[in-house]
Length: 162
Image (cartoon, rainbow, N blue to C red):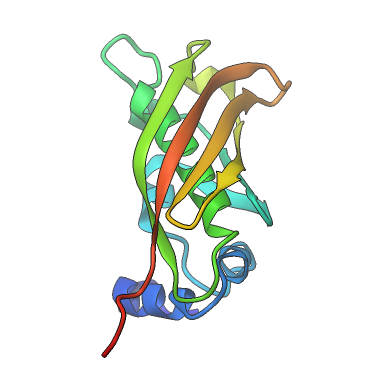
C-alpha cells in the first residue's frame, strides 16, 4: 500500500474501478488499498462485504457532536449512505460505478459517544440496469436499532467510445 503522503486518490480510484465492485470492496477490507478519507474523518470503516451486502463499523466521538452533545444526524446518515452505496457497488462489474441519487434516514434513538461501537448494514433490495435500491440499518453493540433508511443509487456506466 502507498505511503499516506504519496497517496493519490485518483490513481486509487482508477485501480479500484478495474475490479468488480465486490473485489474492490474486499481489497479495501484486506488493506490492499488505502481506505477512503471519509472513514478516517468520521471514525468508521468497512468491515464486511458479500454480494449485495456491506457492513461498516463506527465509533461515535466528541468530533461529531451537535450543540446539544448528541451525535449529529449527519454522521448516522453518512453511515447509512455508505453501507447502502457499498452494498450496491458489490453487485457491479469492473468499470461500472454508482452515485447516490437519494438517501432517506429515520432516526430511532439518540446516539452519543457513550453509545459505543455501531454497526451499519446495507443490503440491496432491487437492482436494475440504471437504478439500484438498498436499505440500511444502524444498530448498537446489543443490536438495538438506532436508525434505518433507504438509498436510491444510479449506475454509472462508461461512456460509449466511438
